[in-house]
Structure formats: C-alpha cells, structure tokens
Image (tube, rainbow, N blue to C red; front, side, top):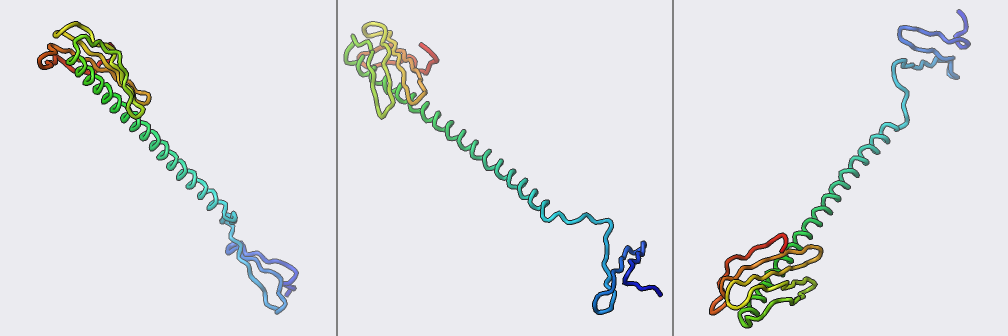
Length: 167
C-alpha cells in the first residue's frame, strides 16, 4: 500500500478529506461543508443592530417632534383664551365708563401681566344705541369683541356681545 501521508484521498460522497498522519501516527479527518456560507464574523448582527437603532431613533424623534407641536398648539390656545379674556375685560371697563359718563368714547389701553386690551371706540351718543369695540392681545394672538348696547341708564341693556373677525 502507498504511503497515505503524502497524498490526500477524497471521497466525493461524504466530502471528507484525509490529512496526512499526525505525530501520533493516526490520521486526522476534517469535515468540509460544501453548502455552507462561511462565517462573516458578526457583520449581520452588527448591521441588524444598526437598523434597529435607526428605527428606534426615528420613532423617538417623531415623538419628540409631535410633543413640540402639541406644546406650541397648547401655547397658542392659551394665548387665544387670554386675548379673549382681555377683550372682554376692556368691554366691561367701557360699560362701566359709559354708565358713569355718557360722553365716554373709548381709546383706553389696559395692560395686565404682559397682555393688553384696547377700548377701540365707543360709538353713538347719549343713553341709547351705543356700540363698544375692543381688542385683546396675548402673545401673538389678537381677538376682537363688539357689544351693542340698547340702553345705558338706569340699567345697561345689551343687544349683543360677540367676537368678530374685524370691525
């Protein structure tokens, strides 16, 4: 028989290679898997982790963006409520001034904690058919209120009190 140490015998069916004899005199067999993909050293795990991290970051940024948008909307609603309250306050001050002085025609500006309101005008003369126009401003929001008065004395009788887009 020929010396096995010098040659490699291949058995195609089982795909086993016989290596030369080791120092102990026994042959060492190695299995060669022909259909397997060689290991990539963790690249798939690394790429998967990066993709999951990117998706998580995108979700977190979206939630942050939505939170900022909601905070801005809430602040604008707060400004609108404060502006309406200031406009109503100026109308009440104008009603008080008209009741005490029939010759009152407005033009006053009132400031409270950074918000302002203006009694734009009190039109009409005397005890009947007066109109009060007032604006209230808070932050970037301005709201306008118009009040129609039927009678001033002895007791104020209002025809309407409404918010308007413009005078």
